[in-house]
Image (cartoon, rainbow, N blue to C red; front, side, top):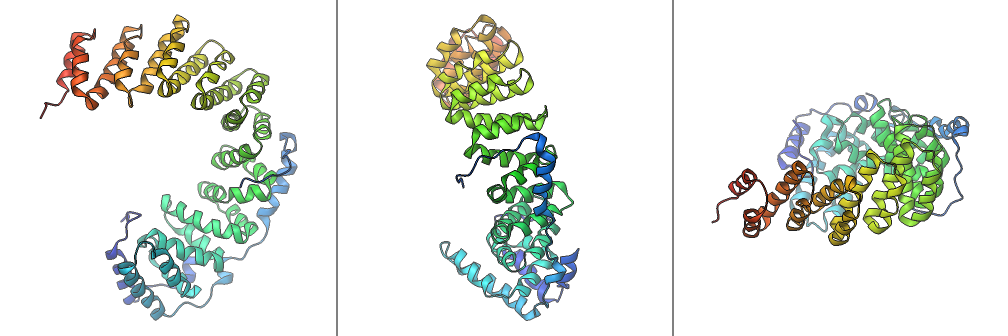
Length: 426
């Protein structure tokens, strides 16, 4: 039965306590078995990947102790028993501002063997409040990191395991990054391995950026999240270098996305340099994806700058998408200026821009969205977007919306449908 995270269940703890009293704990050894900082520029060309990957992988081959090597004698049942009594009492009386300190004091008062016994049997971390489980696991990570990592691996996959894994690896990575990376490198489950590596990525990038990037780039499809995280961190420090590195790879969907993200980060600080970089990319899918990413970033920062990017796109789907993206973003920040720009677009591009701009206003300013929508030339799209906007307006200001609907040029059946959907006034 899945226990809802974030809520402390006294019944669950009481049940665990009862199990302990009944002597249902098994030998824990069986479970254990089963910031931004200045740096020199990073130069890592794809041609040197093999050699760099080998260097970067060395850190993963360092030996680390196994759980069986470090297990200590099991705690006495009475110590485990008393912990649950103390924990139930603490959680029942602690003030919110004192809770974490008191939990840490209780956990620090237990020896490592007791904490292992508390967690290993029946996966009891699942029955504990998040802050209690994290405090216990951080303490164990300091004293017995390999056992703690193996314990987390035994928990069911999901957000809770990932949250605990992050807390433990933050501790372990700070104490002994090579050992933490070695443990993560031996994980057979690719999803779990990537999750672990992502949790360690910032420390790894700070210690050995070339090795971290090489490891992620060997299999970009499997390590997409890790690669994106590492290049994202690099982009915050050296956006031009990160963008150039990602763009040098041969066409690959994952690397296309990574390059787009790096250049978008670059454009937020230096849009002219980023624009020059995009224009020098070979024409094709990657150039278009990167240009769209930059346009999206600029549209949020300064839509007027985004207008200058439209000519980067050739006529067709990409150009239409770019125009619609800019119209949508711009309408939410400055509807008047956005509409004026849309009205100057060629007839074949204007409808898509106005439709997108109306969509950007529907949630927040439906009374403006209906005005945009009625300017769409294509009748089917005009009626569809106007009806969407009118429905939202009815929810925020029924009287004004009804008055507008009655005098609008909407088809009679659309008017009836909208007015019939209006809740009766109380």
